[in-house]
View 1 (tube, rainbow over the protein chains, first blue to last red):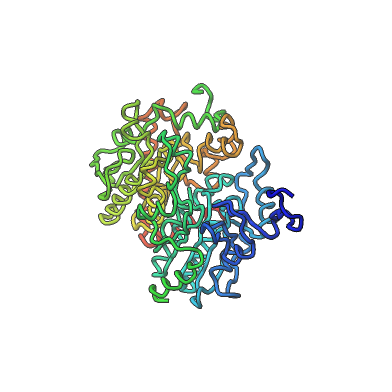
View 2: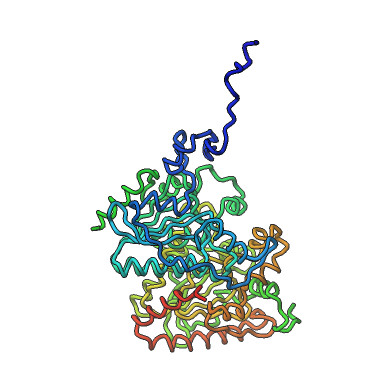
Length: 276
Length: 270
């Protein structure tokens, strides 16, 4: 047996999806159980992978406290939009079946370290977390619920922006959600915005950027226009850190970058400063 | 195109009219619409965006705060005003002037005509998203009447940043959209040449938007478009703005703000 041959008793280990995941940040194989237990944060490089809305709710709220609101509010089909890949209504229905949520945001009541809140969590897997009329309506109803219950409102964003398939109706959700947030603030209630990867376009240019505090996850992409569009406009290559959470903080638009494992405690602490 | 009668214009034809180089711009409106105009400069934070213009104006004897995107005419002016693409300091100037209007008890009239908010690295660094978001929030509670005129190109969030109001008027050949037809075509059809189809699918013309209850009133234009007879086009805008201001000024301010909230809350409920 030559020295470079493997001994016969050691089987070649092929990582399988059942046990391992490949970190999207450092490309290393990570034990899936440990990664899951850390809410999809890589133990090697601290890359924060995207969470589904239900995973986020589990990570932020006290066990068993979350009660969904307005599950029946779903997408609308105002333009009868159809493009080369088919009808928007069919895609939306397929997404609902796949994700098990009726819109790009899951809203409800819950408790964060025993503090009752109204919470909205976006899900990037639902059509890129795009802001449709159902998304906007759920946010407005959540804001009104927070006012009625005199509770803080917390929204976790993850979105590419407006939902083109709903055209101008999608654009108007930016105004609609901001009007609802303004009322929460007028009622003297806290509104905390958490910007996760990615928070861009019409969502960053509406409710995600107007928190009493804007809180970001490490390395999250946060910005208005897309990198490619900007590079084409200014005809220059942009630095790697452009539009990261760290860049956004350095420019004064985010209060704090909080690692995922500390987020729940961080929110509870802030809410206590706000008198809750 | 000008030979086509209005009924036969496609949405893509209307896009071309809305972007026509000779279409009346904010400077034309100021010249033809206002008996007096006192321009007010700067956001008090960074600079004075030439792509957004604003100031005290008198229209048919009515004192208002006039604010609008500024497209230029010719290359030189368009470079100065960044082709009507406002930067964060433009949105922040607009907000400063709206606060002043609220304080002095005069209504706000905005003119929307932009391809979109400026997608540049400096605009990102200075918080383009935050500037627009803050305006949306602030305009929803402003305690003075707001009349919005979509006069040319209503390009996405950059348009909406000064377009939250009590009455949304739209010129017959203006467009208002979440994304440009070209942008939509290249993303959803993966083919920029499908812009005409995207323009139709997105429903961006005044007729369609009236049908969707996004706008309140269509302001007629001269046959062939506003650029064929600027004076007539501006006269129609003047009539519509004054009629709406007269109605809005009679509504108590608390009720006005309630109605504005109800108006935008209803958008997207079917």
